Length: 203
Image (cartoon, rainbow, N blue to C red):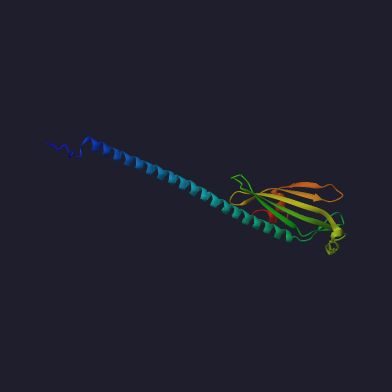
């Protein structure tokens, strides 16, 4: 006969207790799994954000460094310009020379993922000319400020696609008093054809 003072492990009370404990264990396990999933998702988001942030400085560094190289090549090309003597009118030869160019640069970040950076190079110089009756006489002339014919400003615009700089457009402003100022759009071919300015094109 069973001992009622010592209930067995299969009594209703012990059964309910066991079921309750198992339920709590399962609930705790579910909470732990959910928490782990949330933590992993948060890590992924943070890792992705850090990766993006790390990529931005890398692109910026490349854009700046490559543009500095372009500006240096442009400046060197302009400095290498030489005087030119060419026939002008019948019986006339003209010597053309250039003052040292002032080169300014600017790089700006954009909101576009396609062209994250744009750049600009501004070249300012003066053109001097003198004419003579023969090629030798024209070549022998020493150009001075008195021979100044015009003041020019070239503006070149570029875009960076994340890997390299590309030409966008160009413009030349010419001031030659007493004439009116003249603005001339410049194409890629126009700049490439000018020995002095060709160095301002991306390679």
